[in-house]
Length: 113
Image (cartoon, rainbow, N blue to C red):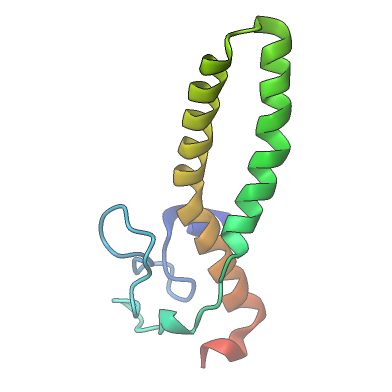
């Protein structure tokens, strides 16, 4: 399931694209291969909440450790941690949303009928 989430593929056939072309996080309406209706998913704010917890729990201690050892000026912290937070968020939002959709498809199949 993790491999499928990283590839952002359909939870049923594991072949069709889950998202529209480009950098959009907007889902396709249906799978081009198996015709699964993606509009029935309910991932809601789950991926964003998980990212907030993960980033908050990891970046703050990293910033404190970095400050204790390097002691850079405040503007370095502002630039560095903004870039790191945005990179992690943009890089993991699609796979995390795909994982939530795959979990919903596996554990709540009645929602997809």
